[in-house]
Every structure is written in structure tokens, then in C-alpha cells.
Length: 296
Image (cartoon, rainbow, N blue to C red; front, side, top):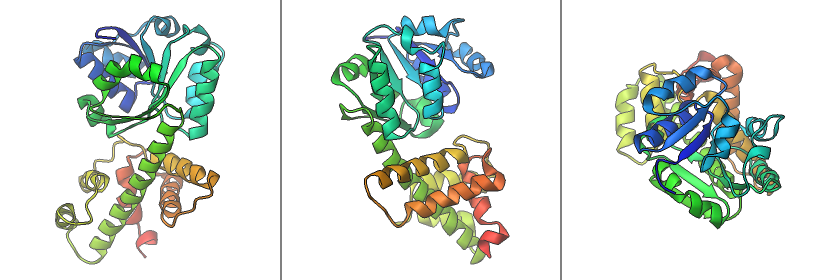
């Protein structure tokens, strides 16, 4: 496989759009589709194509990247009436990038296999800026044949590429473990920044110290800096870590594991969503924890 073979990308929001831009920059030809036509149109100047019949385009592409929000949307794209799966040629590779439950990933892969289609369970981490740079991480699980066929494409998308196993679902498991830790770290960062303000400390200066000390975390620094600036336009919606931490706890429950922190972090995200912050970036967690009812 080599550029500029066409690659179908379904779902070109924050992450899917950034991935499409990355492919364009490297000379690949992404065929893009989204229910929000404006997102597709934004990618055309970069070199992406918007075919009228995305189903037919997918049959002629080297792989189809699914970058929607959740398992339900993934199933709708693939298996609903008019979905892609029945039209894909045998041996085609579908790359699943949403954060979904491990069982969902396994079930979708099994259903695609009935059409002769291969699956790479490949959730991503790093945010849109890193996706555009090709420095996000990809956690890939799936059969060796699909991995080898798509390796140049995967390497174009990510300089931090991990082949977890041959079993679809293990990418999802790895991503949920990562995102549960990210959620715990973000809740912790927002909590201590709220505490710093209550103690009369300058939050920015306190974060300067933390970033050079044992309490530093990437997500804490990234989100708190944005929170201080009031930059709450959604790059990572509050709903995403609410969903991902919930899925991680469900996976933990299925194997009989119960930890002391994840359940509390997940409850904070759920409460923030319930409080009306679902349309904001998860950096808004600081504002949520600084509300009088939380601080008092």
C-alpha cells in the first residue's frame, strides 16, 4: 500500500477531520463523509474528496476508517439499511477508531467477518492537534493480515503505533484503561486547582510548580491551562470522558475488578454533564468544581 491510494473516512469531526488533514498533507486521498456536510466541505481545500456515493467509494478504497462517537453510530454506519458492510469487498479492512466497549468491538468484528471483511480495533488518543501532526497514539488489535495491509496507512496517521494483539477488543480494552487514568488525572487536577484557589494561591503559579514536580500530568496541564484562559470550546466534549470512564467501569465489573478511584472520577463527569456542561470541553471541569455547592 502506498500513497495516494484512496482511504474512506466516515465521521470527520474533531478527530476524524484532523486525521483526514494529516492524510492529505502526506499525499493520501481521503474520501470523507459526515452527516454534517459543513465538516466535509471544510476538508475539501486540504485535498479531501466528498463523493456523492460514499458506499461505492468505500468499495474502491484501500480501507475504511470509522471515526464516529460510539458503538451505536458505528453499527448504524455499517449495518443499518443502506449501511456499508454488505457492499464492501472480501478482504476489505474496516478500522474502528471510536472508544467503544470491548464486547462491542468484538461483536462488530464478528459481524463484519460474515461479509468477509477484516477489522482493526484501533482507538486513538492525543486530541485533534496531535492527530493533525501524526503524533497521536493508536492502539491497534486485529488479525496480522489486516495489520500488515494497513501498516503504511497506520504509520501515516500515528508515530506512536501499538499492535496490542490479534484479537479485536483488546484495542478497546487498552484505550479504556488509558482513559480511566486520564479521567482520574483530570478530576484530580481540577480538584487541586479549585483547592488552590480556596487556599488563596494563584492557580497559574501553582500549576507552574506542579508541572515541574511530582504531581504533573499531561491532561491536567493541558486542560487547566485552557480553563484558566476560559477556552472551553469543545475539543474533547465533557460527554466523552463521561462515556469512556463509564465503559471502563463496565469492563472492570465484567471481570470482577473494583478499584477505589475510577468510580468517583466517573461520577464527577456524570455530574458535570447533568449540570449542563455537556456542550463544553472537559476543561470546564474546573469551573464545575469551583461552583459554591462543590467548594462548600
